Length: 339
Image (cartoon, rainbow, N blue to C red; front, side):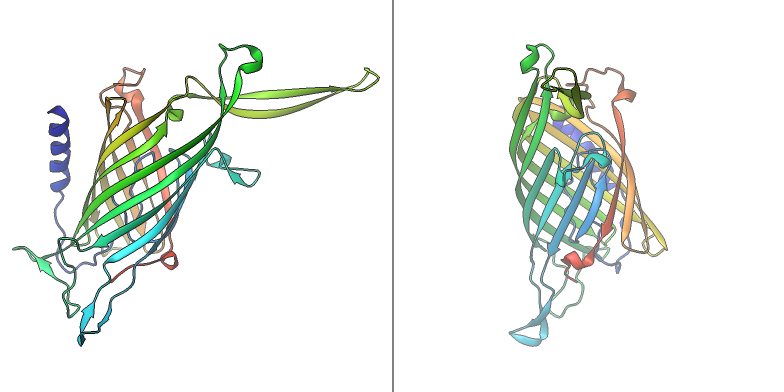
């Protein structure tokens, strides 16, 4: 019951956002996400972006066929409501600078394919191509349903000081999967609400301690008088590594302000309910974003990864707060949105 009350309260806060006036364009930027790159708002544009909280670089391609003349009548408009796209993410522990090593992503790469359907319950255009206005306030409303599925590949170096010296360092190859169903509603091009459920095979690598150590190899000359010492720095994780099946329920709300100004800005509120091993963990955060006239958009977000202190070893709430930055370069050539 407490879980439902929490979600309803958060939804109520999101719905308090004042609706924009009708006539604004039905567009939204694909930038709103949490510290793990998760979101229930899948926006119809291509982009290239970074997220400093989980040290990731993400690329998205989106395609939807534009509206055209209806074969049944030259004065009518036919919309293709289906769309599809791909999303590829590379991430690394230790910062964005560690994303590449010897030309490959380390330690993890994920890729997914998404398919969707626009105007599931609310039509955006009528057969003549005129925007459809809904309700007493006559506002433009459009919704879309998206299904996303993919996998993740990651290679980790683990360190366990409790084992014998020869067994303390080991390699772990992770192969996971993800499936998500997301539903979004966009109101007057300025207010968007998204809900989603996803299931994934995940690991607890984020809960382990990241360490660095130097590995030395000593080679002696045949005469025994000279030696060479080769040294390399190793990034590893210390702790008990585990994998599990995780169910996550997400709720996102976005409100655009001053859409007609030179610099638009938006507020993003989100909540997450994560279920793993019958242990519910609540996460929540808020983000503030800027959209100058151009293709670059970015913002900062503040979040708590464990509101109820269920899995954290830090009882003080302020120490369980994280802050991150996300920046995306919107690339319309990587996606063709519908009008």
